[in-house]
Length: 163
Image (cartoon, rainbow, N blue to C red; front, side, top):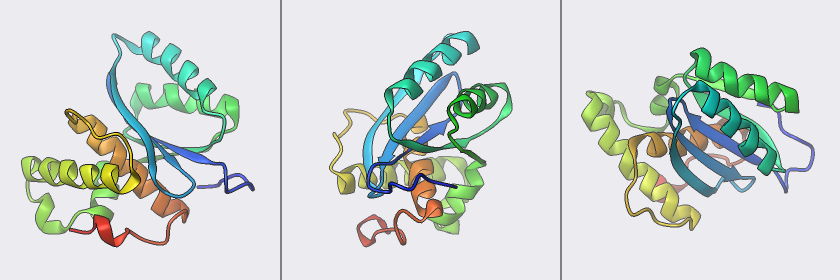
């Protein structure tokens, strides 16, 4: 991932694609700034929301998306208009780096471990604690953690986040 020269004021947006989309924003220190889940009625609503969201983030250096297809294309077109690089990954990409193999044996177990790790990222970052945490939001948080690691914004998984 390429990033702007001013590393002090940059952010990475992580997205778990779907009509119900998990979104997480990370700062240049590798910490989570905010996170949320949002449902879109259709791809037109998603297109409008992506335009508005990207307009509000001044220091956006890159976007990391899990998934593809038409919904990914919406994000990619809007990012291209703004000159923001996008990295598309599969779930296996971030899971391989952040979860132990034993924690990925079945989907239910992987989601439980992902939720626990996402909650540790929230705490480590000093972000607002959730009343509930949807799986798409948990995954967006971990996609973002993978993204800041891949970009070299932090050297490795902080000890506080290791299982």
